[in-house]
Figure 1: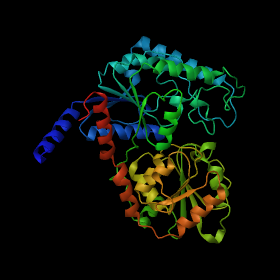
Figure 2: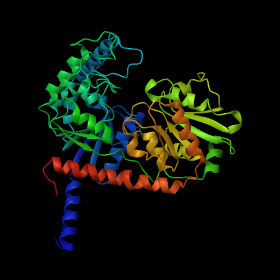
Figure 3: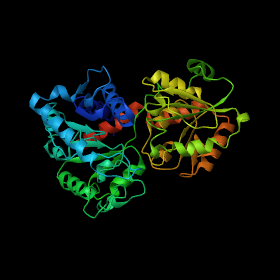
Figure 4: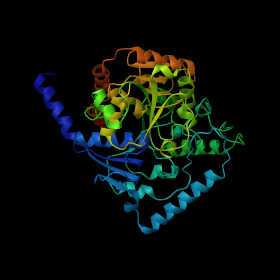
Amino acid sequence: MSSRAGVYNRLLREAKAKHLKVLTLAAIDRLGGAGIAAYRTHRALLEAGIRSEMLVWRKTTADPSVHRLATRLNLRQRVKRRIAMHGQMLQLRHLPRQADSAYWSLNQFSYPIADAINQFAADIVHLHWIGANFLPIQQFARIEAPIVWTLHDMWAFTGGCHYAGDCRHYTESCGDCPQLSHPGRDDISARVSKQKRKAWARVPLTVVCPSRWLADCARQSAVLRDKRVEVIANPIDTGAFKPLERREARHAFNLPLDKKLVLFGAADGTADPRKGFVYLREALSAFAEGDGLELVIFGAGDTDKGGSIDLDVPLHRIGALRDNVSLNLLYSACDVFVLPSLQDNLPNTLLEALACGTPCVAFDTGGIGDLLQHQENGYLAHLADAADLRRGIEWSLAQEWWPQRIHQRVAERYASDRISKQYIELYQSILGDPS
């Protein structure tokens, strides 16, 4: 092919892409890990020239391209939705689960959300996190456009849990669920799993997983093994998240200039067992007062309520940060970011920290290894091993890091324009234009 023909085909592809109309569906925009990832993907598509709109249950931005579901439902439909949400709440309330059970959604109470979705007349409906009965299982078949579904956890192929832990029942059929107080062969997890498998068998559905780990789980699952599964990471704005001068960043939060600062952050991170804060606390207990190490915690939830956290090192509470500028400053202010999650997909916090040039320490679990290369941009500790987590913190604090080099690696793989290009190519292949 001549260079002139190559340029012509590229321009033709770009022209076709700009006529694509995409509707992104997520329960919340720019709040929580999945909501943030969904909104960033939506904005990346807009910046690439795609006609993208977003439909959410709860809107937290002033973005006119984001629409609240309530504004797209008439009075009768809103009443049906309220009844459905009440039914879901009562069902979960009367479902006895183990104390350490993961978050659950059942999405069995239908209401006409597909009518609102179809109003947009999109070429592609792009789903993100739709738990808490936002998109009921029965409504999938009523969506008129092909569906792309970016998974942010395991719910799409389980019987109700968003993270399965060590359980592998989803590979055959759920049932005898270890997260239920009274599991059985035909328990609620078995019934929901069968309902998903039947409902989605005839739906034109393409699955996207941000991590290789989650993609492998989806391909092995009884619910999704017959679907097309692709790996496309979450995007990040590498212009908004970049290395900043550490001294100035510490001044912004009134943090000490002469201490080694370890950063931890997650919504309800100290309370959610899956986030593994107990292992970080144990790892930090090995540090002596003279080591000059202090912990910084940010994120919504228990850290905002001023609850007591028993630690052997000084603690700085930052609370919830909603804007990229503050997050960029905080990541840049700290020496190392620690993520002790016991199971995770492709955490935004890890991606943000690395984009800011901050080395990270995390357990080698889920999709974390996609982002973190052992002793290159941080340390991958053995799962649930507090002693190895401590070794990772010590090792990382002893290194001389080049923040710009860590940032560049993120920019090469996860920059918004790179991720939007991958999604556009996927959309075109689904619509019969693989060029």
